[in-house]
Image 1 (cartoon, rainbow, N blue to C red):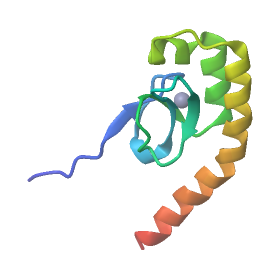
Image 2 (cartoon, helix red, strand yellow):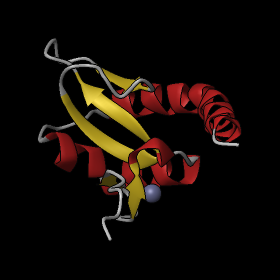
Image 3 (tube, rainbow, N blue to C red):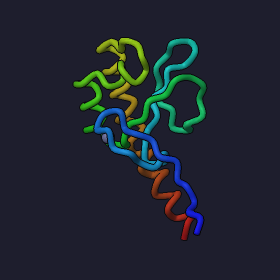
Image 4 (cartoon, rainbow, N blue to C red):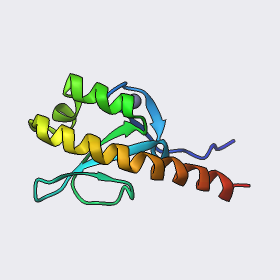
Length: 104
Ligand SMILES: [Zn+2]
């Protein structure tokens, strides 16, 4: 029996392996911008976080994004990303629910 493989990624904060669609991608673009990429398709080095603010805060505290993106991330950038994270969280959760509806 062949099982269909679900792509798994690791949350950089809590180290849990999760299906990609359960995670929010933070990307460092080739222009050295850091942004949240809900489409998962932007070019650049990416780091994944569970779609939970608590995980973002954990990443901020432990500087997990610095390690995942292999460059220092300033507290200002963490703060800006945190604001974006709060903004996209609802959209992200709504998107997940919509996806579940599609499978019915
Ligand atoms: Zn996590």
